[in-house]
Image 1 (cartoon, rainbow, N blue to C red):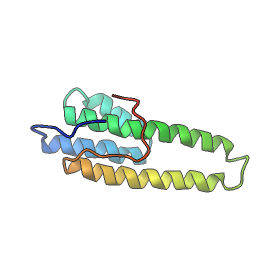
Image 2 (cartoon, helix red, strand yellow):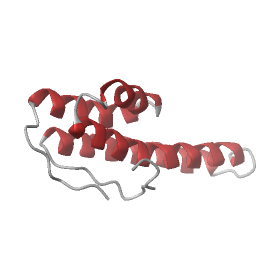
Image 3 (tube, rainbow, N blue to C red):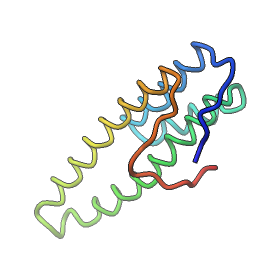
Image 4 (cartoon, helix red, strand yellow):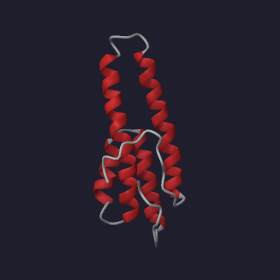
Length: 114
């Protein structure tokens, strides 16, 4: 998907890339806003933003579908909670990877942004 070839990645770039992933814990808007504001300033941040959003967009859509059927089945709330926990763990792990200069990989990701 994305190549891990970056030159001159600054500490600020790494911090912003980490924030892009960490902000996904709160909502899809965090990564989207940070990416839109910073994508033209750093290729490293641009790529990390795309990676984060390629995970957050399908996760958000899955959450909407599960949320819509929660009322139909008794354990729908459990599934939605589990999805939220998976999001938190993956965002934190991949934010840490981005901070260390590595490109993160989410197991559930659709390449929407290229």
